[in-house]
Image (cartoon, rainbow, N blue to C red; front, side, top):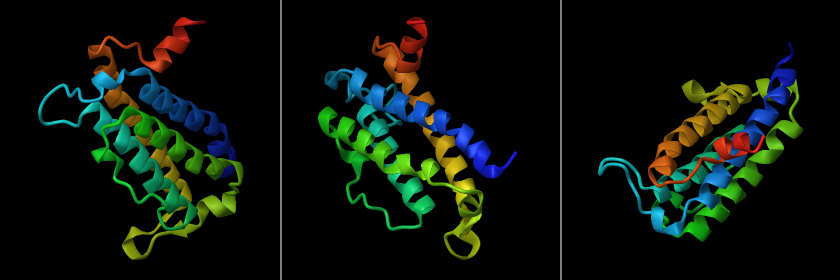
Length: 156
């Protein structure tokens, strides 16, 4: 299987995790954005901010351009701001797969020992996004909110 074909087939997967995170930002009531399961972890707002920050971080690296995000969304507490940030960061990342070719995915980004093929950074981004969703699911369940992926499955 060509590398592009592999990542193209995982594009639906990338879209799904982006949707899960966007809907997670939307579905939790603002009053629960300050919730944290224990004092040593981020609040729900912090997790949503982390999702937006890391989308920009990974996708800027994949694209080979400076990170356009100048806001530390992990410090943001307002739900409306965070919903917009997660959505905007998803939009920023959305063009990666559509224009990808095997050659482009294998181009190195970064310098020296930090250099990696774009495909490796993309794989790390998808994995990290899934980890973030996996982190916020218990926050939602402890808040009495059905996670978006479960809610979609229940509609079938």
